[in-house]
Each structure stands twice: as C-alpha cells, then as structure tokens.
Image (spheres, rainbow, N blue to C red):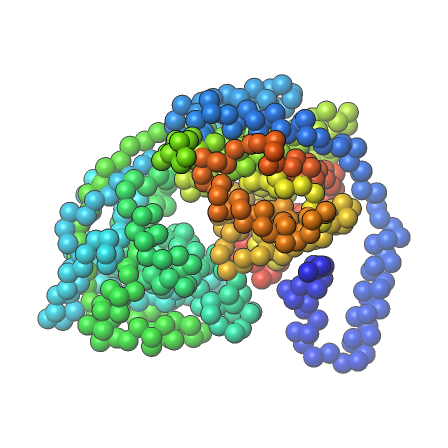
Length: 568
Ligand SMILES: [Zn+2]
C-alpha cells in the first residue's frame, strides 16, 4: 500500500525511447550530479514554519457555521448573509486585508432557469418521422436567458466524443461547420474501457470525459444544440440521475459564452440513440468504434430534429469572501487558498431533522482555511509572497462562486502560483497517509509528498480516478484557468487502528452523513487530531510556496497545462 510518487508510472519516462548503454550511463551520472548540486548549494534554506496549528484555531468555526441558526448555509437563503457576515468579521479580526478592491466580498450574480418543453421532439430521417418523449427518451434545457427557443429541422451530426484536444491532435468537430446543427456525442472519452493507459489516460477520467466540457465545447463550436448519449457504465450513473438532475430549475452564472452558445443542451437515452441511428441508416456500435479511432471525422446523420422550449428565469446574488496577507518581497505573487462556505440548506426531514448543517461539507474546510489565515497573520515576519483566501459560494450548485472568481479574478490569474482547496476534512483521527485526488496533474503532488514526509506520512493515490472527483470541487475552476491545484482528502491508514478502520469510517460518512441532516459536529464521533494534522499540512505547503520562488508546473500529460508561460 505504501507508495512513493516516483513509483507512479506517469513519472517514469525513461522507457519512452530505447537507450544505448552509454546514454543510460550518462543519464545516471547526470542524475547523481544534479542530486549532489541540489543538496550542496541550496540557494536559500527553506524557511521553517514556526506555526503549530491547534484544535482551538479550527473547532469554534465548525461549531458556529454548522449551527442550526445558519439553516444549512444555502445561497440566497437566510443563512447566506449570516455566513458571509461571520467570515468577513473573522477576516477583519485577523487583520487580513480586504481582497476585492477594498471590500471583503465579491458579489456573484446567478440566474436560475427553468426550461419547459412546449413541443414534441421530432426526428425526421428521409420519409420517416419519429416522436420522442421528454424524460423517458431525452432531457434537454436551455441555459440562456431567453423566453422561447424554437428548433426547426436542425441537422444532426455525430461528433464522436465531442472533444477538441489540440495537444493530442484530436478534434471530433474537424472540418464541420456546426452553425445551425445539433451535435450528438458519446459520454466519457475514447480512452475509457480500453487497454491503453496512455490513450486519454485509459479508465482515468479526463476533463474531456465530463459533460461540462462537452457543453463548453459545443458552445465554442457554435453548435445550435448538443445531445449526449447516456450510457450507464461510461457515465458512472444511471439514467434517472440525468432525469432528476436536468429537469426543474437550474442555477448558473450568466456568461457571454453561454448566451452566445448552443440553444439546447441535454441527454438522450441509449435506446433513443440506437433507434435514431438505425432509422438514419447507421449502426451505433460501428459509430462508437469509429469515434475511438484516431483520425475520426464527424458523420452527418441525414436526420433533422425539431422541438421547442420556453424558459422562466430569475436572478439573485450571493457573495464570495476574499481576504489576503500581503507578501514581504514578492507581494504581487499569490498562493490561493479556497474553501466553499455554502451547503444545501433546509430539505426533506430525516429522522425529524430537516437542517442540512454541512459540518464536514464544508464548515470544516472553511474553518481549516481560517486557521491557516490566523496562523499566517500572527507571524511576526510576513511570507515573501502574498497569500489569498477565498471563501466561495454556491459550490454545491455547480462550483459557481469559484467559477465566477476565476472569470473575474481580483488579482491577475497568471500571478497566482498555486491553489490549495479544502473541501471536507478527516474527522477520524491521525492518519499515516493522505489521498491526492486527481494525482498526476502537476508538481503540486511532489510538493505535497515532501511535506507529508515531514509529517511521517505517505501519499495515497486517487482511489477512484474513474469518477473524476478532481472535476468536482472549486480547485477545478482554478485548474481550468491554468493554476496548479491541490485537492486532497485525509487518508485511510489510521495511526492506531489501521487501514480497514479508516476505510470503514469513510464509508460510514458517505452512506449516512454525506449531504444529509446528520452531517453535524459531535464530540463523540469527531476526532479532531486528524483535522489539525491536515490543516498543518495545508499550512506547511502554503508556507513553503509563499517563501520560495517555485512555480509548480503541470505535467505534460495534464489537460490543464498553463497556456501562458510563467516568467520565473
Ligand atoms: Zn463540499
């Protein structure tokens, strides 16, 4: 189970090309020499962090924010202002500087859209006409703030996986003008289910596999619409999840890219896809094979679709809280901590309790970031670089506060060295390991491992890389704009009770407390030592980066490589 990053295949690039013995020897000598150089003339010894974080720095915030008075911290709800006021007050008390042009808050305007189908979904193929049923066969919605959407005889084009990945020389939209047309695409990416671990990372989900990416790409391609073919295994969830998630009100940011993008987006059931392809003279299995083959070109389906939707929308505003500690020598460079303050509010009662307190998710992460801020602000010596703290809203509604920040940053994005995101914590006591979610993207892995070793701990790789958890919390929006990000999760390997105990504890939380009213703090079931241990780790990583000239880089295989080169 024990594991070093250097054992991880992604870092083993020495077998890419066959090497002569002489070349191998040269490589070994070069490596030895560089190791000696690193150790003999370190330009500046790493500033040791003098701070020792404690339970008292963290627990009061968890108790406060998860109190019933906050009503589950739902954006726009009564708990919204209370949470924001509390966080602003804490930032002031710590002497942090306001992070948004003299203000501690950043308004995040959001729009809630409810789309209703007003006409049947009709597909014409030659002389045939087939009508499909909303909910059972397909689910579509409109993300734009317009009242009516009419689709009339729009051409359907099969665009493989809907991926345009220039770094892999892959473009499923190659050579086709999508204006006025609807793209029909497969879920996940072409590497899924294959044997080749290097091809779109095999079963590890890449961002190209997420539906959010496919939506964005269809907008960029100027398509009229996008239909994703649902398949349970590749999606990772059954059709009813699509049905329940994509019907009813949808909260989002009002964005130009969306307003100018596709009119309809959504999903079609696998049976509808089979039927549609067959009636237009195509075979789905053959199309899937073609879509997984390099050089795939989009295939017009000789079919058109017609439908109509009406939209009801309303706007509302919540807030991100932003504050910072100013750096001593390089104040224009930033280490960015993030934690979402929101949760899901009041809902269906479970065992007589209807307040979804979100103590772990994410009062705990918010408290941990406050504890880091507290310990940084009480240092007599400020770090070299500035440290920025963002407490973002509406994570649970689709990572919206962090997305807004990434689109409207309060400091230049290319001056942000790295992001450390805290979403949840480990309430089960001291651990020997620490899980890096989405491992293999950037040098943040190595930095984390260095700091873990100092705590006598080891790296646990992402335990469910096929589920794409790296794309499901706020750091993802920072990664998307090129900021190397760390998203960790406390480990499984309990110092006293071992791995099975740790796994059981984690499984218990997921099955009983995740997004349930019972996500509450209790002194009986929470062992705060693990929370403090991870808070210290996050602090140490930030402290190290804030006192170095390091710019952690993305690995070449990552889909988030910075597009701009950072000047060292
Ligand atoms: Zn969360």
